[in-house]
Image (cartoon, rainbow, N blue to C red):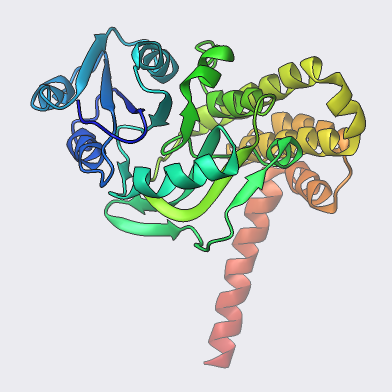
Length: 313
């Protein structure tokens, strides 16, 4: 493996990623400051992922396992990593070539043990979102992360010892495993947010069923954290309730989009119980309008618009 100033292990879990895995690996190999090692875990792929990975066996470490999920694959690589730092990279994403060279000096200066960067989001080869860039890199504390824990797991750098101390990723979670890890890490270190686009992320179209699971898992993660951090919750009761309210409101919004109004109403009412907000009340009113009335309104709106347009013509 290449020698580098910092012992960094880049970890890439891969499952059926023949379309993206090669450019992902190349982005890890072609760093201006080389990684100590690159570990790719083939998580039981059934396409050509293994064949593509094998083409780089002289430059990467390869671990193969039966399909056990991304958290299991990450944990396996973390346990086997020889680096002092872990850089997590999803197999359909790409690091900018200067990622390690730019991140590590700033991470060391901050005295944090965990950092994440801004990203460019791409869908079908088209950039759909670009993070804002400046030199005002931000050290975020527990309260800041609790309010908004949504950090792209791809591209983050964490001290390996810290990841091992918290037990790695929770393999029982189907979603929200990134939120779980982030909140657990906050008991040990602040997080450095580097305001520079250093990774390209592929847009992921999560299914509605997965989105529903996300809110269920997210609430479980927060409940577990709240149970262990009683003093924090007592001191920040308003924030804790607002976060709960947000999760239930967004959960209800997904049910409403699916047309399951009864389930939507249940979740929105729980949201209002924790924190009253006008936007939540408006969502509840929307959920209470019967579908046939919505269809009737749409139909009449179309007819009215046609009449008005005809008269104007």
